Amino acid sequence: MPTRSARTAWNGGLQDGSGQVELSSSKAGTFDVSFPKRAAEEAGGTTSPEELVAAAHSSCYAMQLSALIAEAGGTPQALEITADVSLGEDKKAGGFKLTGITLTVRGEVEGLDEAGFKDAAEKAKAGCPISKALTGVEITLDAALES
Image (tube, rainbow, N blue to C red):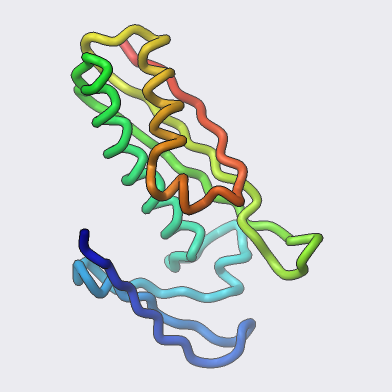
């Protein structure tokens, strides 16, 4: 299996510095990062490690769920996954940590009822490689079929 790479160039200190993260393997883009904007409610046109984790988690989860739906005898027509990744204070070790991830999935699926869909959704949460990498973070799931 391949290895993927990203690179960050950073200038300055934590509060006055800024950087750019480059998606090196895909060459899909370069994005600005800054700690003050990372810690603010409004991102102001910059990304953050948490947003990049959310992107990785939602896309990985979508792939895993589509495979498990097919294994269960269903056919995914459309899946919409949102990953909300929260950053907060680490009261035990100091600094910051990811305090939780909420996966929300709405699906249009042929051949599975609500119970079958929710079962596949839970299994995808456990089996997605990004979920496995984030075992130290509480991950909650809200899954439902749409008509």
